[in-house]
Image 1 (tube, one colour):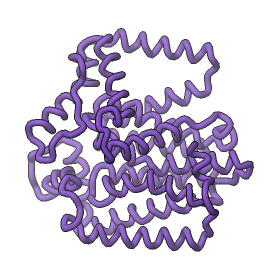
Image 2 (cartoon, helix red, strand yellow):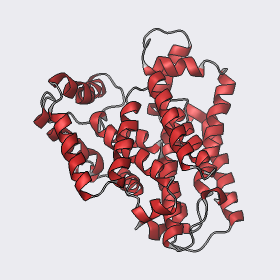
Image 3 (tube, rainbow, N blue to C red):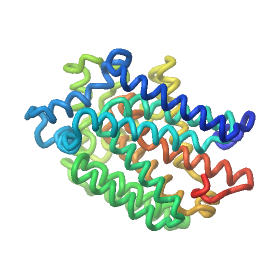
Image 4 (cartoon, rainbow, N blue to C red):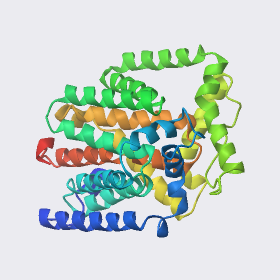
Length: 351
């Protein structure tokens, strides 16, 4: 469906696309400058914690907020704003330059709007993830898939060691998905069996470490957050055994990927469409991967984010915010598949 949408509607000229990109960038910069006067307060929640660490607070010492605060403190306030705006403008251009038809413009807005809204109006942790995605996509222009995979692993490992440790799990999950894609049917069955056996042999403390952060985050949203917990959810069972782990993980998959069943309102429907688009981008057909092997890196990274996020994400908004940080990877996948299915696949360096 998304491949058809990418080619639906009238074809747009490069001049028109450039004009739309310029207007979008100007609108983004205007809203960025307006800041808290026009944007909802919850967008600044994490940024305020980072800023507090930059101002000398010790409240979040040793946390990811502290790590990012130390990095951002290398910039002055004005230079930091320029840094974030530059990432935002480059992101908008990188999304829209892959548009060819009116339908593709709709998909670019669907994928790009949540990323800009959640991650590019403030200097947050996910702002750096967006910058990482821009770097990874740029490396693929060199037509060196191995180099792209190396850069992706390197930046994710560095980010994991300095900011969020669970990004090591994302790299591990992405590697597992890549091996699964390359394997035959028997090897895939063996990999599934091995993965389940490995989970079964984990101690109870490991299940708690993987899933209990969700309950802790929901407790914060329910009892301390001034913004409420509209779409948050607890684990169904105490995550202290293999069976409980499986039930809680499947329940999280249901809550995060079928939000219209639990939040049948306009926001829930909009987030549902975004989640479906991200899933569809990650499930890239094998023939598209064979045509441009570097795309496997993007597809596996997106799937790695999805698989790991279901371990701890406490609510739908947080899930969409984190997943939207790799929206550019999804757009590249859709764009390339659209060209491939139309029989005119072109080198990525030309797009």
